[in-house]
Image 1: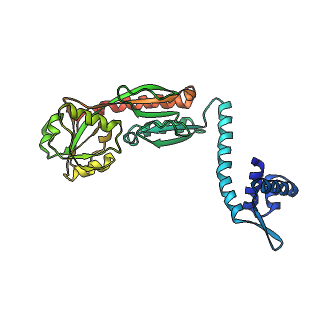
Image 2: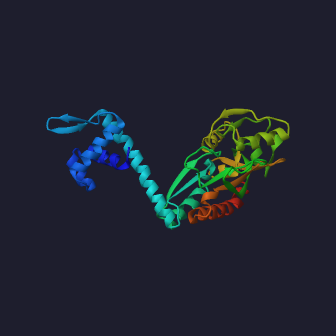
Length: 303
């Protein structure tokens, strides 16, 4: 199948006639008829049926037209991408981030990018891990990389920030009177989980607990910080989370630093080597570092 045949077919379905497709595409009716005839031969199915003096797409023909929309959309994106490459810029920035950055750093990164690169589309997605099979590959992804975990193949890594963990609790909890809370003193409390799956952020907490001889008893298991904080506000337990996850606390909830030991996650920006020279990628990395620098002081202060 050739692209022009697919365009002719999609236009015929949209306009309802060969002449309508010819007028829309700037071809003669005979040229459109020839393209449709060749397409039918190649696919080996009947795309058109006679209805009175006119023609009508068969169900198979309509199904093909629906799939053609996606193909033509991808082709248009590809043409835009090539034109952008010729102009020395990227038409799309694929940017991955993990959940706690969505309401903290991300607005300060995306806002300037939209204004400074109006011709670039931003493809944002949320993930705690890097998936090497994902397509399109992220141009830049913010990740927590535990010690000993290497940079994914094809990427270069930039350290961004160290995010310490805090314990969140109701303001009337006895622990709230402390300036900081030793990890061992959390051993006999009811914990509210807040992580999805068994990623690096949960492992950091479990390792810190194991270092002082206990495993947390999760009374309630949730998979996001806002839900966990809402449950903390109801007095159902306490929740340990990164400071960046505890920036918007419900009424009556406070947070305190954890010490002896202090769990900390290392946030990195990984940049696709093939995209590293693109101005939009370089700017996104710079804005990420600025957002991290602006947030870090507040992330170390208890509420």
